[in-house]
Length: 370
Image (cartoon, rainbow, N blue to C red):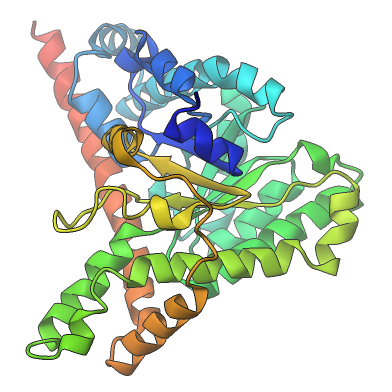
């Protein structure tokens, strides 16, 4: 009998693990996730900061790299790349079995480059070559500077995970960048059937930001209170319709005929931040074909325990539109909120990246001192 994760697969949704750590890869823990039905892995600077700084998994390798004279930045890269390669190798059978649809692991370009198009392109190409695995995606933030980078990278044959998407308007640009990249690759004689991409649409953080404003303005207003916890799922449901509009259109048909894949929406930031909400709030309502949900381990365990599996992504679409309209009518600008969330997201990952480097240097000194 299929478990809940496997049931999602049958409905067209892949589940990826939003977590990586060397101890997990070197034990039976990661294989347990694969056996459960997990078909991919995502990472980010915050995940690596916690993994390297919060465990002793890397101490021996860190000492050896330090003794070899590598800088702190070089040490991080060697540690991260080895983890990504290890996960990619374990996921490769899934990549082969699904014909390149699944089995991917994502590695993020330094968030410190989020406002620099050319350096993002160069770094993404370099990382893709260093990892040297066909089932790796390079994460590029969906900033204004990241959009042309996505087009260039797809056009150069690099798998891309477009990340930190909050705004529907920015998601429009991400889809256009992907299609333009495929057209460029095709024009230059490349094989579009070998490219894969996802668009990571962040979910729970939208509710956190909108709910804060609703709480401030809803004193004694029941209608406004009814909107609490509704913005994030509504935003994602509208995004899915936009996905269908692009990839079921005539413009994409020619590329599809040459083997091009759709750029799947990936629901990210899916752990419920508000303890008053269901711990599977950002899983159950967003199930649908050609989607990915990347979950941290605790959300996976919750969904395995009590998650319901049915296609829900297009249910209550009109209600989702009404919720977003009502939020705007309450004087809350989704454009302003999503713009701030993007800026905050880049800053958060940049802070984590810098904290990671500081942590490596600190641990390096501690190990050297015995």
